[in-house]
Length: 139
Image 1 (cartoon, helix red, strand yellow):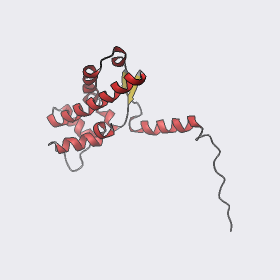
Image 2 (cartoon, rainbow, N blue to C red):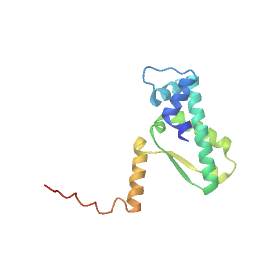
Image 3 (cartoon, rainbow, N blue to C red):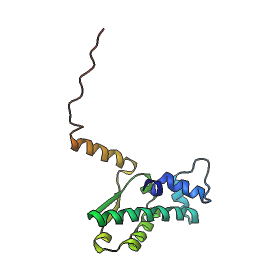
Image 4 (cartoon, rainbow, N blue to C red):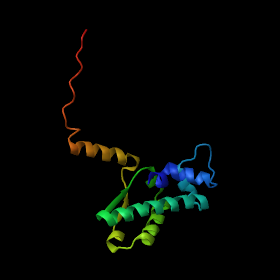
């Protein structure tokens, strides 16, 4: 999924297909150009959204996911990502329960992965374990 729908990979694909943007192109620039109607920038988001929709549809059909939260920097593209994602979901979904999946943008943005890792550590008891003893000072 990362190789199709992450911000850096959307930018790489767009650059390889004729999009140009300053010395340090990034996902925010790509989203701005897509919003302005640049065909390659829009195509990059369409491509990424379709891959993301395929993953969501597959996962939801297999394990009946009811909610999906999209995080990371690419989620900041807003309608440039979420509009083609909704269209792709409509095209790819065959089951009503899959199409009923609620898709939202993470409120945590690029820190979503860190919050998830912290929650996992806390839930598994790793974060609550006693700290290791301090090293012995042998002066």
